[in-house]
Length: 618
Image (cartoon, rainbow, N blue to C red; front, side, top):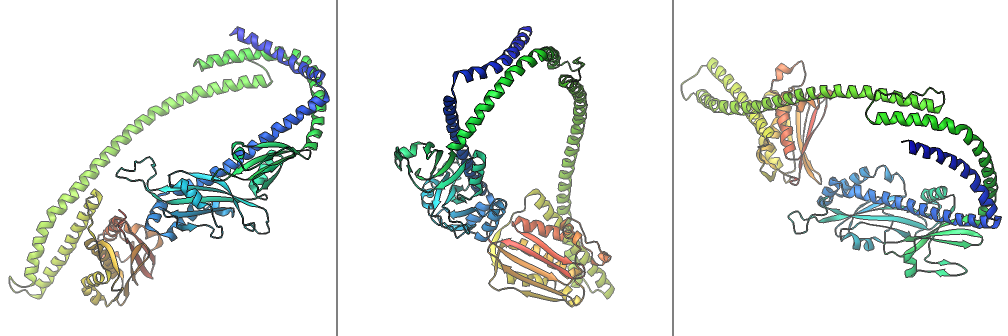
């Protein structure tokens, strides 16, 4: 390593000498005029750089606009709403996706179906006349983004400037993977198109930002040619080739950045102006400071370089040796430099870092060992739980099936006894056998619920969906509870349009309604009411069961759908039940891709709303 250290010493000496000599050589070789011309060239380069900055800021804004399109186009919910034609839900979803961006009035979006019909937009007052040109690109599956000119100068209040728009468009595909072959089973169709735009003019924050970043006066011009004393650059093939132009106009340096539309035609320019007088004035100050700085640098460099050279090179050598040892993995080594300056602080920091690394390494090794132990234990626990869950499911299914057959036989004999086919019964015998029948039916229902839970958990419950009349089905279910309704003197009404239909599995629909209406009958006190209504929305059919029962507290609304959960109430023993009815109703509704919502207050009754989709989402 010694040759490299010697080279470093020579390099430092040479750097100090050259930093002092070069400025004097430059000043002696070049005159003020040549330096001034150099400054003008530097200003021209600066203006070119400013044009690049302006172009980059415009490209960043284009990328921001097209990212908005991509976020919307990749949203599965948006695709589903386009397929279903649900424009209201679509508009709400688009508002949610663009909530932060669309706070600025400059932004807007349009979403079209695959026929070019506008499904939703954020600003209907902006007439986008360029969409047809963009659709020729988008229908091929490409993305498109460009800058267009808007004739209307009154888009922003009290603003008469020419308005431009950064307009981006993206096709919305059925699937995210656009590489899917057209002749495959999953044909990746174009569902529609999303357009997003950003409107700006000379007073826009984007133009002000460009002005601030480039320290130039920025203007927007709507024209397709540049006129100078020497030439005219017009809307020709030449205009399509250049990216930026720097010219001298009236003693000013002026840069032009052409704005291209989707057809790659120049529709205007972003004009950056750097006054020449300011350039020359700055040049004079630069020359004076240039001379003073380098003379001072030469003197100071010679003096300080010789004084501090020894102080810098020697401790650096110690630092290099110490770091090499640490690099070899020797974390117990130390750098022995006793100084109070920055080099001493650096050496101490390296020593502390090495000690901390050594300590952390030991801790990591210990933590890794403990983590492996915990990981093994966790794996064993998970395995045991999975086995226990499988045993539980098997047990429920087996026991339920084994109990159901003899219980059906028992209920059959009980029914024969009650009909006195096998002999006359006295009142006490009838009452006892009626209790046996009642408890047997309860047990049979419980076994049925357990079987349903087992099928749902195993994913073996199949639905046979059809369309049928809601009113007829609800009236049939009401008749099931006639005995309890009459006993409690409840006012139960079914107010449903006779022609209203629901798309569901009839048997499971009845099971859901029986569970919910049965709860309403059970928890509604004597002389109360139960009102059953139904209505439909654009996407679903809703059944509403409202009662004047005991109500449910806010903290129990979600818990009531858990299995075996019963509402905490001093009268629970009076109502009884297994706590499975609402849980099964919720599971069956979700199998239909629907949902159940609850509105309730203690002492004011409850309202259950069950929604069934009109179409088979699965």
